[in-house]
Length: 173
Image (cartoon, rainbow, N blue to C red; front, side, top):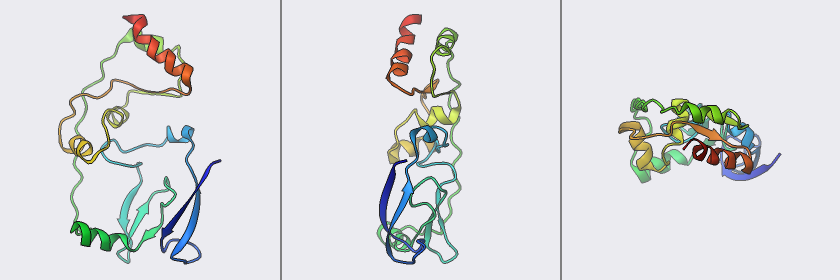
């Protein structure tokens, strides 16, 4: 497996050093396709910044190499630079439900003949892959209207599968 190395100032490392190299496995593409990503914000489900009992910021979850570490300088930086009180709580906005997918039965039948790593018509996948991830776009997804999202999301595993998917609409045209 591939590995990456990070140098972080953290109190979460076993040896207690403030600057320590942390080595964790990078998530392989096959596993990434099975992880659930937030449709209405950045990151994976189960992954979020949180306050420790001591008031420091930590990253919850286990999907990132720095998950579980404590970042003692992050809170003071946020409060001083961004003038944000990290203890203020704002209720999460409920994401707008996208329009139902438009199903082309002939296309769906033809798609069944293509071996793909994953195919999804789930709202979360459709929303996540139907917009960019800039601050403005994530804000629009959370608080605005979803004008249009894909009807279906496919994860091809190789070039041949991409070519087969791209050819399908021309066959039914």
